[in-house]
Image (cartoon, rainbow, N blue to C red; front, side, top):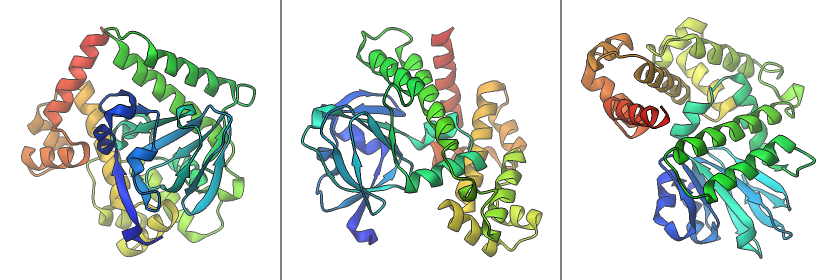
Amino acid sequence: MHTEDTKSICFEDFKKHPLFILYMDNDIAFLNNLTQITGNSKKAIRLDCCMIIFNEGNESVHCKINGEEYSIKKDCCAILPTGTTIASYRTRNNNAVKFTVVSKRFLSEIICMNKETLNVIHYLYDNPVHSIAQKASRKLYLYKELLMTLINEEPHAYSKQTRRFHFAGLFCEMLAQLSHLVPEDKRIENRNNRSTTIVHDFINAVNADDGSHRSVSYFADKLCYSAKHLSYSVKQVTGKTPSQIINAHAVSRIKYNLKNTNMSMKRMADYFNFPNPSFFGKFFKTHTGISPMQFRELEEKEQGGIL
């Protein structure tokens, strides 16, 4: 599909359609309609966020995902990672279909981009539709039912935290169950080609780093590959650039320190090997949309609400 035939949709775009929003905070949204948001059915959308489509009706949902035709039947869901394209979405009963949209920021907080996660993401690109019928997957069914109850109940002082924690549980449980479905020969560690071995080593090196090294050349030298060869292999296997994976890891380490230490911004900049606090703040805001200080203040408010 040509780029000009596809429009990108990020988490923020869903805020423009409040009539279809059942619940929304800064990182999670639950919606009951997609057709008005996607607009022209002839134009595919590329997700710059993660989406889960739940079909609770008797009529199937038909759509084209990553260029392939799929039918999402009753008690099934489609799990669509960032970068997925959707086209030709159609159903007779919009009211029976629910959508969960998750920001990339929240995903980076609840999951680690390791080889197991990459295995699941690649599996989902080719196998997006799965059953959530009560008998087929009781835990997922119970998580979903509880989550919908929390969304529809009268809000209280801890509603936001409760919904976020339960969604994190649902999403991680989905990943855990999906990881068992990935064929052995499709796993990064077992694929019989050199690129997957390189990516395996790269992911391990990034996860072992404290977030202070953010250049592709650093990891290429560490693994004894050229930066060009490493970039090609990572893009081929994961669909992401090395910089995207490196920066996502660095941001997760910075968030951890912001939440769990009292380091000043200057000390934090030094710790993560930034030339000064200004560069540190700019890097963090580019990848999260807020400054490090704002992130810390928001976390302190949320923790205050819990305690």
